[in-house]
Amino acid sequence: MKAVAVYPGKPNSMHLEEVPKPSVADIPDGKGVLVKVLRVGVDATDKEINDAEYGKAPAGSDYLITGHESFGQVVEVGPNVSETFRPGTYAVASVRRPGRSLYDDLGLQDFTTDDEYYERGINLRHGYLTEYYVEDERFLVPLPKCLAEVGVLTEPTTVSQKGLNQAYEIQRRLKVWEPRRAAVLGAGTISLLAALAMRMRGLDVTCYSRRRAPYLNSDLIEELGGHYASSSDHTLAEASAMHGPFDIILEATGFSPLIFEAMEVLAKNGVLVLASVTGGDRKVEVNADHINQGFVLGNKVMVGTVNASRADFRSAVDDLIKAEILYPGWLKKLLTTPVKGLENYKEMLHQLIENREAIKVYVEVSTNAH
Image (cartoon, rainbow, N blue to C red; front, top):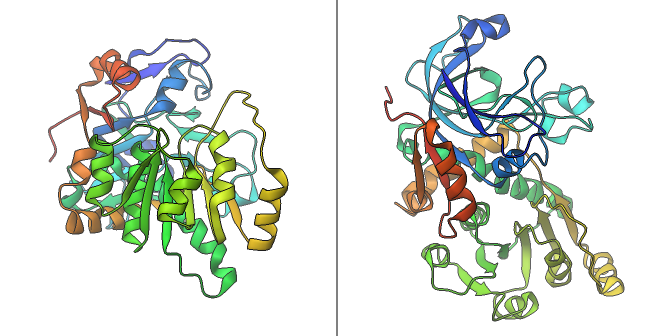
């Protein structure tokens, strides 16, 4: 069968690879689930892996199958798989797999303390840009038929789901925490889905991004009943004065200096969630004393979020179901850029890199759902 793969460490090595079709017998204890891949979303991670910025091949292989945003349909199950998964069930798979730390043993591999981690389509585990994959049912989450058109957005939704879930978990220390206003920094896929999740939690949401409105992304924020502010017209402090103060801020711009501005405008008892994985060596001057004083006297929290647990995937599915009811058609508008077939991986990369209007680029691996 076909798969899109790279040779890790070799820039621009993305290619079509012929690989064996997996079997439910590949998973021990009769827990295997064979999934036919229908769609796979791609993002900057896939570009960076093709650029050889990171990523390693699984043991015994010289290539890595890419793609970590899965959506597919079960075609076969092992003898000991629960009734949750049966042929025809739509499913998504989580990304990180257990390592060696205590947290991995507890099923919290997204909090691993290991220096080396295992992520499907990213590092040491093959991904989902292929025709079929097999997985232990522990790492799969079922989706209802109502999400058949938008299920490929599940993994990107888990980014903000984990961040928000952690924010609320941390603030249990306050006994009573009733956030009212929130901000998302950036207007890409992650930020738009974060804004949706915030609206689901009853928050007044402001999206702060560089590009001036109107355009599709700003329109989508307004369709949720949110506010949009451009950094070309307002500082983050000015946006906070207009629409804040912000009890929750989720940063997903990839521009690290903005974090320090967010620290300054965060409300008392607020939580700043960092979702960007930034490289480079940017240096900026900051109002260090003011920021420190604000965090100490204001009981503020800053927390990083990476990857997601199965629980975050389940809450993402719940929010996607609610979104289809409360904002019908909204999610589908995010699916701006389909690419037909694994063989068109060069077009996929082109759209990912060059198409400024794209919100979500995804590959239609198969249209033949059961």
